[in-house]
Length: 147
Image (cartoon, rainbow, N blue to C red; front, side, top):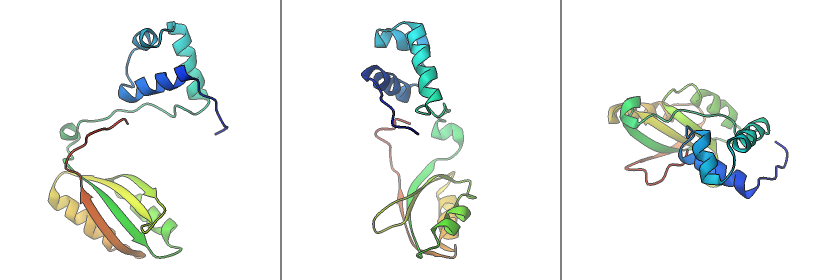
């Protein structure tokens, strides 16, 4: 993506969309003090430039059926990250997988229906050839979520 210059109004628009991506254009226009057409043009431009990659539905945990979430840190043998990441990508319980710098190599956001299911997933991750260590932090509550 090229180096983009976002205006203060672009940032305000993006911040509003982070809170509610379904907010009507008319409402966004009122908040920003702009016309509907201007907001629509900004949205189209931000989409075309790849700043806005898409819109998504964020399910309530109860509605999605998954009530246990955990951040799982994963250490991997040198030169095995790509192989391990491909295997982890097949786990439907893994919502996101990040490679990171530092003592660990990857962090996965895992979501399951029950604690027993979480335990099984953690065991399966630990059995992957190349995984040397895992640590799990179960999420108790979420204080801020701007996705």
